[in-house]
Length: 354
Ligand code: NDP
Ligand code: ZN
Image (tube, rainbow, N blue to C red):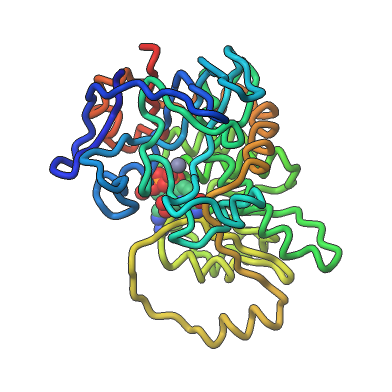
């Protein structure tokens, strides 16, 4: 079967033939339909993030997939069921309390591997196997865009954790800003709209015309250009935010997001920046966070419950959103073109049926 891989000698994604996997007890064989590409994949092929499976000369890429059950084995899943696989799996040392509690997303490094990212083969192949507990059923209508469940679930988790940090008092958030108009930021915006935040904003650094700005405005959100409006000025120019969701990976935003918050607000950080040094008045930041009861929460990955919430949110998301977000659909042999990043490209996807 065909699989899209990088090798230890060659970081260029390429299609190779590998053996079709077979199912063992508790496992399901999934025929992969579509696999999305995101910034993490680019980081993986650049060698900046994750690593190869032990003792393997290649790694199958891809972590955002949708497929159809080919063989449910001895599990409850039957052939023909549309599914989305999760990303984390137990490490070679075996399962641990995080997996047993259904919260592998909270496991520290060393207690998990990530398919297509860190220490395990990914989903960008004609067939994959997975234990049934790592497969989330989705409706047939998700055939073309179900691969968005995984990235959306990352935003769902971050927002859930941020909101949970405000659960000790009566909090009725109305305003939110997403920092970043990449695929993760736009999915987070779609989720906040689904949740009913009444006034939404999204920060980018692009000129019009731009498809991501069209999406922001079609959602009824306000586009904020970071070249004109700093996070410190946001509250004065627009309004203070109850929630900030950072999805730029721009290191300053990690702390500056607090400057955009209303009293009692919370900022959730999703971006994964490289090391970066900058000047900052830490004293004022510290003082304001305390005097305004504010919170800053970091969040990575997601568990099955977040996938299920993402599935619901996608069902409620208008079809034009997916049409505008997915800017390129490529067959596996056009993998190089799929990995080319340019500003017209929001989200590329590999279609194994092409
Ligand atoms: P992208 O790089 O595609 O998107 C980031 C967006 O932020 C781009 O549109 C970029 O604009 C914009 N941006 C960057 N800096 C600024 C700035 N200073 N002002 C305004 N806009 C800015 O990444 P993704 O959407 O895929 O992911 C976002 C981040 O989240 C990444 O760091 C990624 O690694 C991380 N991530 C985290 C996960 C988690 O679970 N925590 C899961 C998946 C991803 P432009 O394109 O114009 O440069
Ligand atoms: Zn991803």
